[in-house]
Amino acid sequence: GVGKYLEGGRAAGGQLVDQRFCPRIVEGELRYNCVGDALVGIIHKKPADGGISAVGGTGSFYTYYGPDEVKFKTLSTNFLERDLPKVMPALGLAAEPIPLWWTTDFILASPVGTPSEDEKWIVGEFNCSCVGISKCLAAYCQDTTPNACYTDISAEDLVDADKYGDIMGEVALKILSTGFSSSGPVDISSLSRVAKDDFGLYPQPGKPLFKGALAEIYVRSQPFGGSDKSSNGHRYDS
Image (cartoon, rainbow, N blue to C red; front, side, top):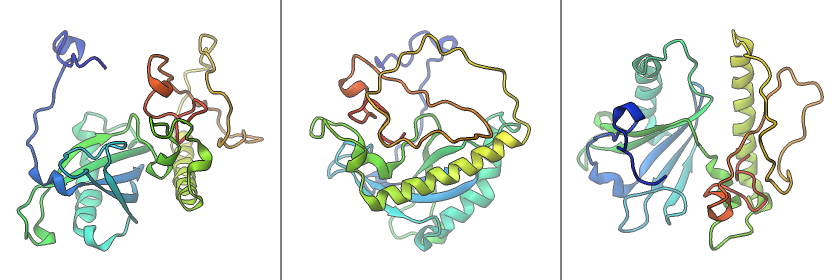
């Protein structure tokens, strides 16, 4: 981006979201990883000392929890059972399925000492456009790891990443099998292959029920092709 978020006004899509500042962000935020309407994992993302951003690559600290973590039970129950059914209708998308792989970031807004059952959590963001699988972060290039690749992901983290992928596949198949209609073949003749190899990608299924494509963006003007790339040119969690 170029930072011109308001250029062209509303007609051009220029906008900023004015939301309250939650000072307890310094304690971290909770990222709820969801596949469809199922919570598959929780990440506590704590900014580096003195910071307020827990974005990957900023020195933030990640702690991983399962979807049934007891310490977040009240938040999980309220979000999944009370709030989630209202999200798509509130966005004017009641007829659309919940995104396949998406996240919600929560920031604690209650005073220190508030009982967990009375805590108020503020949604800092929903993300369903460029969600990464955090267990694969070891495979993305930075100035300090310019040759990062698939083999840099630990065996333990690969097991979790594959588990997420399997769940996504099951939900995607369900979406495609219930009323999905294709608009026909897509012309990809203008696209260029940039990836050096397909290391880490699974082979094509022999008899797929549906046909899809892995489409990625490689920004030639950016180091490594963008901030989410492995050294072979693929997105780090593809």
